[in-house]
Amino acid sequence: MDIQRLTPQEWERFRRIRLASLKDSPGAFGSTLGEVKDRREADWRKQLVEIATFVAVREGTDIGVVRGVLARTDPSTAFLLSMWVAPLCRRRRVGGQLIQAVVEWARSAGLSRLVLDVADDNLAAVALYSREGFESTGEVGTLPPPRSHIREHRRALLL
Image (tube, rainbow, N blue to C red; front, side):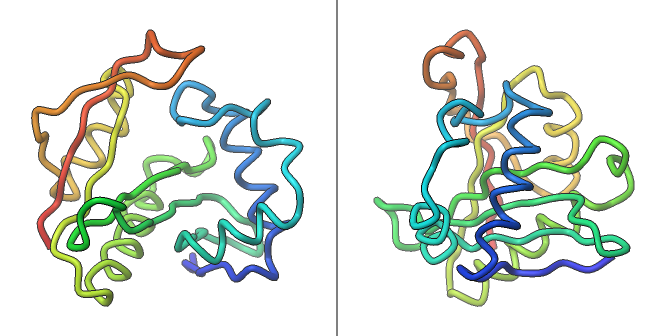
């Protein structure tokens, strides 16, 4: 398996894996499939400029994705977001390797903390983040409407 960082020229590749993740796990993300499926090429390219995007590739197929973005309010912090692994590839260390790609990106940018939000009932993701060293901060919230019934909590990793 290989972890690759996408460039703006690979926007169609990113679009494919992002739409697959939203279709497979609609309750795991702040965005919905309906909100993003009709985005323009320029929007997809812009995201790849502004947000570090990594994909896991096995035998030429994209099997997972994760992104890292600088926090707007804290220059020492970044967010890990959009984490997803294809169902047939879960529990095979793909998620851990994707997380490490964002950790390395954040460290190379001189950041001191990486945070994420995860749904309380997504027990597999909570366990993965815990194994990778992310600890609960005590902060809680919900996904945006129409999924505001999904409660999530924040976890952080000191770098």
